[in-house]
Length: 328
Image (cartoon, rainbow, N blue to C red; front, side):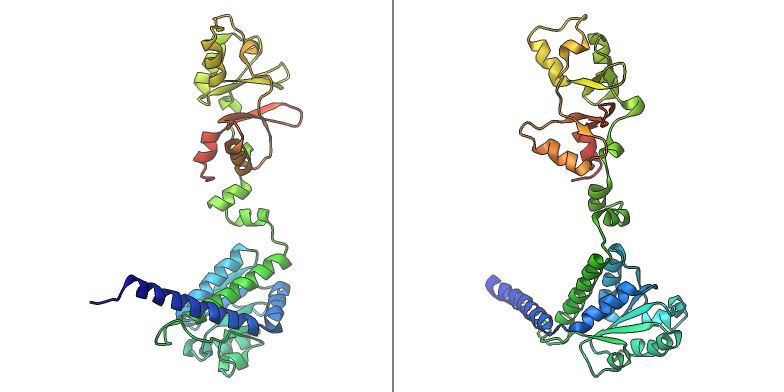
């Protein structure tokens, strides 16, 4: 089969992209106050937002529902067919239904309208057809006119679904700002993902502490220092006073440096080896911020103590442990 040259194929791809961009630009120019009215209605609602649609519009509705839910707006997707077989029971009079359909005449959507009205929920429609029954039955019409589908046959939903998706995303982002949805809220709803970890994990969640925390006293001799570093497997040990306050740190590097100078004997004490001015981090710092700081220092460090505001030695944080938690 003959496909043409690579340049011709690239032209076809760019043509489709350009059509969707142009369609989006024309949609942007046509945006009216009803989108703001819809956002404010959703923001003021005591109920939930229910998105519905069939086919490709249904897929877009699912994605918008997911985005809304993860950014502070209670939302679910309800398939119109399932709704007509009992799932409409999830709709209450306090809810808002956002129905998406390019033509606004899909049988499944139209069949659901009397039920929505009978329950007393508000109906927002997102359609390209202002004369459709869906549009006329709505409390708020969000018109999404399509200049041209990117499909060469003008049949496959392409520009139309892109416009609906962008419109839904824009509404979700506006709702985020209205609800004052912050990073901490986002982290709460995304605890398992990399982004959630970056926003929520503190060094206290990652650091070695308790029985895993390597520490010695200033008068402890070399054997004790070596035992502590070897047993705790972090490549360093803190040096603390009688009040558990940090006064220094001893790393593998410090030991090697002292050894090459012939300055180590069995009677060498921790205070003679330690670095009295180590890089340290305060408890409560975000783990991701600490990871970046450790990596981007002029002289990167692989391990550092964690202290309280009173200089109490609370933990030891290592670059390895931070990376193991999936922060990068």
